Amino acid sequence: MRFLLLLLLSTVSCVNASAIPRVPAEQASWFKFPRHFPDEERQSIPGPLAAAISLAMEDFHPQGRWRQDASDMMAACLAQRASYDVIAFPGPEDQVFVRISLAPGACQEEGPLLDVGATYAVDVRQGLILAVQQ
Image (cartoon, rainbow, N blue to C red; front, side, top):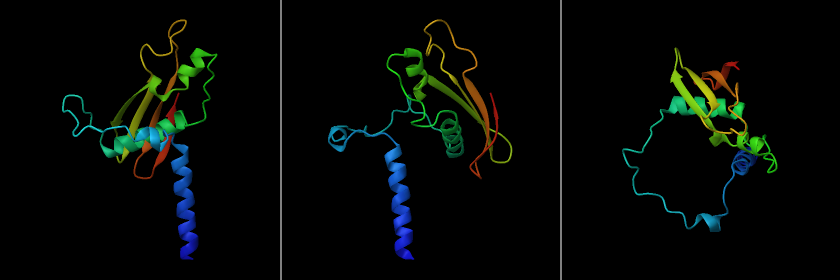
C-alpha cells in the first residue's frame, strides 16, 4: 500500500513538473537571485488572490493549449500570457473576482482588439470557478 502511494505521488509530481517550461539545469546555473527585493519595485499579492488568479488564468489561457504560429504575429501575441493584465479583488465569503483582459497596447496589428478577456468569480476555499462572464 505504501509503495502504491509513493508511486502515485511521484507520478503526480512528475506530471506537474514537466508541464511547466524550464530552461535546462546547465543554463539555469548562471542565474543569480537578488539578495532582497527592493521595496519600491516589489508587489505583494495575498495568497487568496494569487490562488484565484492562478485558477482563472489556467481556465482562460491553459499552458500549452495555445500554439504559437510564428507566421501569424497576432496569434503568437495572443498565445503569450504576458499579453494580458489581471485585476482581482476579494468578494464575500472566500470569493474572489478576477478580470483578465488584453493589456493596453498589446497585440495591435490593425487596431485594438475588442472582447479579449473574461471575468471570473472564484471560490478560493473550494478551488472552484463559480461563474465566468465573457
